[in-house]
Length: 88
Image (cartoon, rainbow, N blue to C red; front, side, top):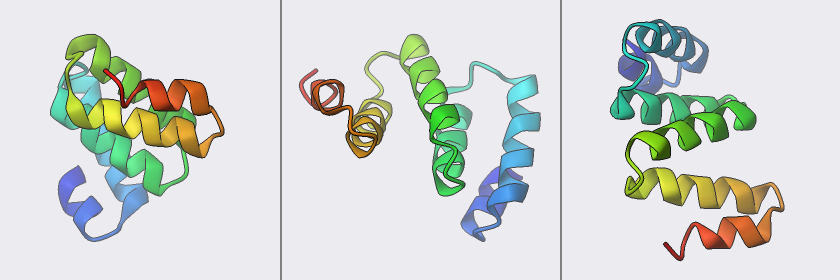
């Protein structure tokens, strides 16, 4: 499973497992969030951001999705938008 591979730092295998699982459960917030963590470990920041936005469209008050979006945007130099994520 993706979580096992992620815990073993087997990010490519985790990525493939999460992609397959998301094909079956595309609206699973927990699954999407785990996929975000995997994407960030693989430096796939655009995909991570897309998934964070999807999580927030499903569950707007998801604390970690808002936090991770803010951190990711700050790292990308999007300071105004990044800091806004910490003010909600």
